[in-house]
Length: 417
Image (cartoon, rainbow, N blue to C red; front, side, top):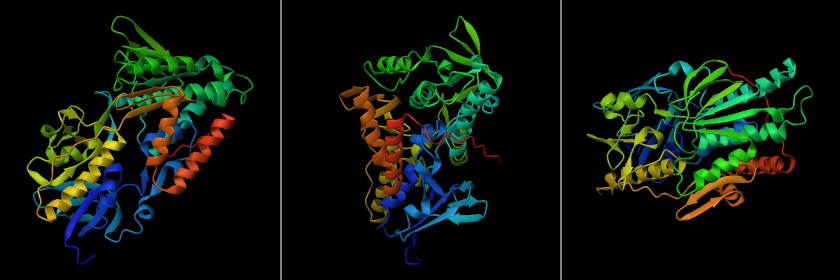
């Protein structure tokens, strides 16, 4: 790559970073991708790992394998600790890496609204470690109830009624009702209580029309107790205190999942300082997705507070993919002496699955619910999975799960730091 003089450094190999690199495959640039993991993770399906439907390898693929034929890319397994925008250097645990253009796409982490002490009791769902830990917690709850002959302890709390929360709550209820119902002798798993707590007036608030109400009905049909206009005020290892403003209730919980908020990765604050972040810790970028005052630094994906046509760009995979491709095209435009256009997000739809043959989808003016929405969700998620092998594995596993109602990846595995 000696003849490639323009150095592009990409921090983070998620949807945005990976798509930027792939888009630059024929550009006269040398690309360095830095990531703490050696794999690209398909985050929208993490909840399926957390509920035993898929194995971790089904939704992850090695970065080097994905880019094995792209000769202008090198991949470094490392952690970025600092960025010097004045001298155009990225600091990793192994040393300095210079850049001409920098793309920062390190995503977001969990946000506990000033209660970071809740994280140990109510983990979020962002990594494979999170997913396998939540899976272990859910399955251990049933094992504990079997040992103690105490089905009353089978309370599962999901906090946050967005897509992740709705999908988790619906799938936990489905596990208890269908998958595990014949596996135990001292307890009936169907007695499990699943509570979804949402601080706002409706679950899936990003959806319009009557889809949030339909989603709530589908969740209720699965046995999920939906509490809208309720919020958590205290969380301990085995209980959650919730309130609707007038009434408080403390619920004993066998397992707690946090899906109520996200916060931009710490690298954002290092780039622009606290004053350059929004209320969710995301970097407020210009209309070309660059850091104000530094047109050579792009911030993409969940870390970016980006506005397109007066609307906030959502933190979803399609938006990150579009941002990655846009940044790559903008880099080429600048190298060739052209002024890049502003970033325009094309909303191709929003969807969430709630359980077996249940879901909601909004695609333009089309509103779907139930089985049609579920099928649309399956097709779209298979399409966006990286690699034919992963698509085949997931399709095979989903087909088997559908026919047998079994979730075969029900392994209790805990990874320790």
